[in-house]
Amino acid sequence: MNHSLMDIINTRHSVRDYSPKPIAEAELSTILEAGRLAPSAQNRQPWRYIVFTDPAQIKALAKNTGLVGMSNFFIKDAPCVIIACADTKKNVRINNQDYYLVDTAISFQQMMLVAWELGIGSCWLAAFSEKVLAKYLDIPKTWRIVALSPFGYPKDEKRLFSKAISAFAGSSKRQALEDMVSFRKPQ
Image (cartoon, rainbow, N blue to C red; front, side):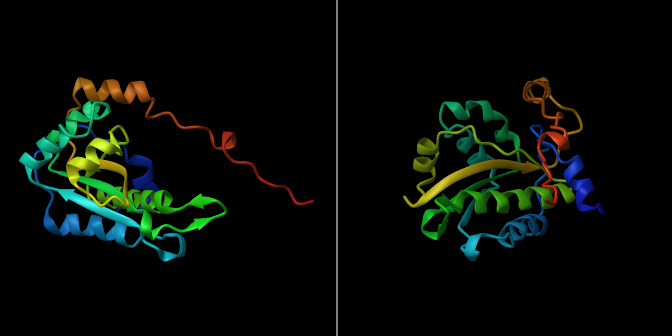
C-alpha cells in the first residue's frame, strides 16, 4: 500500500474478525521496528513486547485474560497477538507524571499504524485482568501490562459480534475539532 499518514489514520479501525493467514516474518519485524523507533521521555524506551504467533498458544492466552477479558474471546482467531508491557524501572517522572505508560502507548500506536499501512488490522484491548494475565505470562514484577492487541488480515465480512461492539462503542463517531481544541489569541 502507498498511502499518506493521514489516509492511514483516517481509515484505521478496530478489527475483530481475522483471516487465519499468518503475518509474514518481514511484516511482523516491520511492525515491531515501528514500535522500537517510538519517542519516549528522556529516551528511556520502557516498552517490552510479548509476541504470540502459535495458534495453540493464542487460544490458551485468550482463556487467561481474566473474567473481564472474556469479552476478548475473538483474539483466539487472530494469527498474532502482541502484549504491550512497560518496564517501570525505565520510567521517568516529570511534573508528578509517570511516563512509562504514555511512552508504551505511543510505541504501540506506531505499531498499529504501520500494521494498517501493511493491510494488517489490530484492536487495542484494555479489558483484561492485569493480575491474572501477568501471572499467566510470568513477567517480571516491575513490568505493567499496558494493552494487548490481535494483529492479522481483516476478514471481508464482519460477524454480528463485531458489528454490535462497534455500534455500542460508537466507533465511527468522533468529536468535532472545535469541541477539543482551543486557540489562544495574542494579547
